[in-house]
Amino acid sequence: MSPLSYLMLVIVTMFNAITAIAGGVALLATGGLGMPRSMLVNGPFDSFLWPGIILLMVVGGTQVIAAILLLLRREAALLWTAVAGFAMIIWIFVETGIIAAISWLQVVYFTTGICQLSLVLILLGVTSRLSRETQVSIGPPTSPVGRQ
Image (cartoon, rainbow, N blue to C red; front, side, top):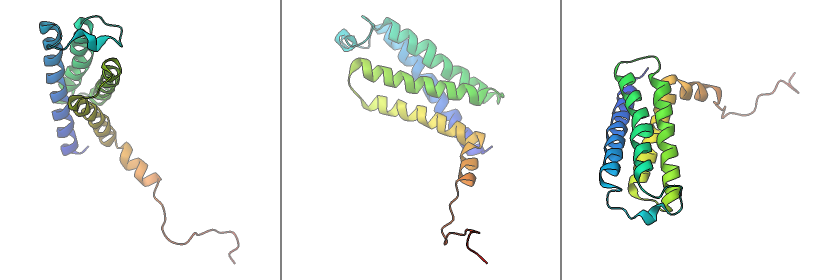
């Protein structure tokens, strides 16, 4: 397990945890951070209450659990981090669908979710196994057929 990849995963996960919790609390405390309710017209919500709860509890909660497990180096840490990364990506997809717009923050958080999933795959060794299995020979084809 690469110590640098693990450290990067801890940093990204802690960043996501802190900012998702802060974002969820801010949405709930301010009723939408000054955003108009008309942004929600394409979705099932008529206020920012449920989006705030989901951001706080689901997205933030999975990120917090993943961060704690990573810091404690528990066996389930990578699984929880993958779940948290997927939760972040799903949150961004749903959010962009509901508000029908894309901001730089959504790009940042989509990227952090992808980073989490990529780092989990790296730490599990999936990427190194794939590269060994898919190596291609550049020389002329070698086939036993037709040789004497």
